Amino acid sequence: MSEIVARQLGLRPYAETYAAMRTFTAERGAETADELWFVEHPPVFTQGQAGKAEHLLAPGDIPVVASNRGGQVTYHGPGQAVVYVLLDLQRRGYGIRSLVTRLEQAMIATLAFDGIAAKARADAPGVYVEQQFGDVFEQRKIGSLGLRVSRGCSYHGLALNVAMDLTPFERINPCGLLGMRMTQVAAFNPAATVEQINARLHAALAQTLAPTAVATNEMS
Image (cartoon, rainbow, N blue to C red; front, top):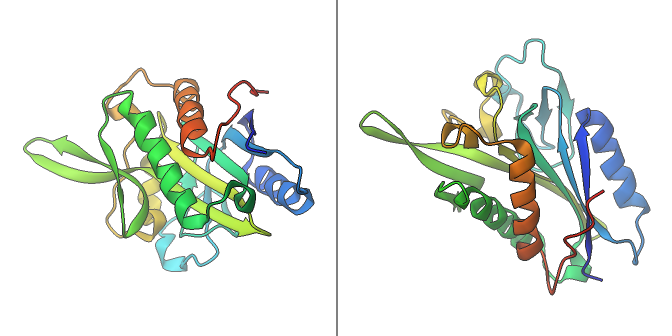
């Protein structure tokens, strides 16, 4: 079975969605279809399983939720395209490293629609862009990854900054990267919306995640 069911969940609290992912993964069987959950979250910091407290600089009034995904602390908020990737990796025939690469490739392909030249880094998962400030080019992060595998199945996923308030990222060292600044699609295309980016991400993920073919008409 290679079909992936895609669900548009809208704006939902992180803790609620996190619990639903864990339940889905714990209860799924050999014939359960894989799913992609497209969602936005109200403002929240999430701390990865091995996250270090020193990377959470000044959370203030934004809640902090502990998560069992990999990676360090990150921020989610409205205007960010989040996709949770609920896959049976054994059935698809690839492992976690391949999944990371496939998710990065999907984000890179999505950003290319807006003429944004993004790239991955071998030393830090996610996707990055070169942004010009006067005569200086600076590398900034635009998309993040955090995953968990249980019983051969993945959950958590990717977050691509679209048109959001980026200032909360200044309260943390994003993904544990000291001095890393964040950017978003709107810095290159002010008209960008999460709905547009989700449609492009869905098409890109259909290509990069498929061992053979992925259903693209399962939006619900």
